[in-house]
Each structure stands twice: as C-alpha cells, then as structure tokens.
Length: 145
Image (tube, rainbow, N blue to C red):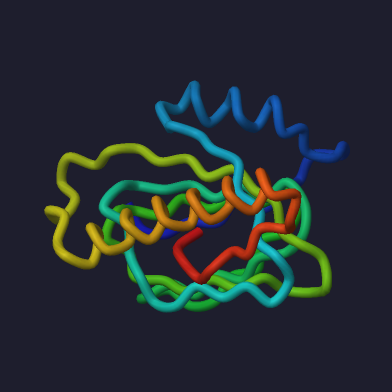
C-alpha cells in the first residue's frame, strides 16, 4: 500500500470521538497526540502502519517517495510501515491529532533506531508526567508523531 492522504469533505467539523471509533473499527490502536507550534520531527520511520487524523491545526508531512502533504482538521493519512518521513507543525497553533498504529506482518524488523525511539518516547512521558505533577508546562522534545 503506498502512502495516501484522505481530505475531509464532510459538511460538518470532525468529531474526535467518532474519529477514534472509526480508527478502532479499522483495527488501529489509537492515542491522542498534540504538538506545539514550530515542532519538527526529523526523518524517521515506524515499524507499524500508521494513520494520523487531524483534529485541529495543520501538520506538514514529507514522505519518501511521495512528496509533501499538508493535513488540516479532518484530514488523515495512511502511512505504510517503513515509510521514511518528516513532520512539522504549520502556523501559530498547536496541532492535535489521533495516531492509529496497526502491526504490519510484512514490516521490517525492529532495529536499533526503533529501540532508540521507544526509549525517547518513554523518557518524554516521564518528563511530561513530572512536569505536570509540578504544575509546570511540559517541554516536549523532538520525537516522532
């Protein structure tokens, strides 16, 4: 399956609850993610198929091969496992989106880069929790969307 973008064409705004239910019905494990303005994720890939479904804000994703795509509220992408890409937040507002992950049997096996990303996510979660416990705004290091 090649990388694909589906633009929001419905006459009403997207509903996060309905989006989450639809992703789950498609077999995705779903979590909510928010990136601050100017956030940037350098070139990386994921071991699983992913879907990014935008709730609010704008996200620019550049995939190899394929080009650059801008996802806005309601838009979603379907990204096969192993697709190299970058991502950055556009504009002055945060981007909020649902990330769906689905195990891909034919995906490349995990390697050191995937392990390092998992460690970075775990560390980011610890920083976020400790900052929230202290009543401070959590700093979000660069990672993967």
